[in-house]
Image (tube, rainbow, N blue to C red; front, side, top):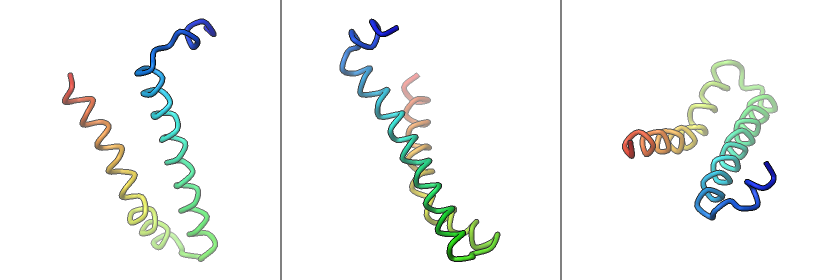
Amino acid sequence: MLEAFIHMDEETFTTLSTSILCTGLILYMGFIIYNLAKESKAGKYGTLVLFFALGFGMVGFIAKTILTEVLQK
C-alpha cells in the first residue's frame, strides 16, 4: 500500500489531497458555526439561520463538485 502512495502521479495526489483537505475545512467551519451559535445563545432558529447563512458558500462548493462530476460522465 505504501508503494502505491510513493508512485502516485501528481494529478491523483492533487485530487485526493484537495478532496481530503476541503472536507476537513468544511467540517472545521461547521464546528466554528456551531460554536458561534452556542456562545451567542442563538437558540434553535438562530442556529438554523447561522448554518444556512454562513454555510451557504460550503453548499455551493459541494454542489459545484457534484455537478462537475456528473457533467464529466
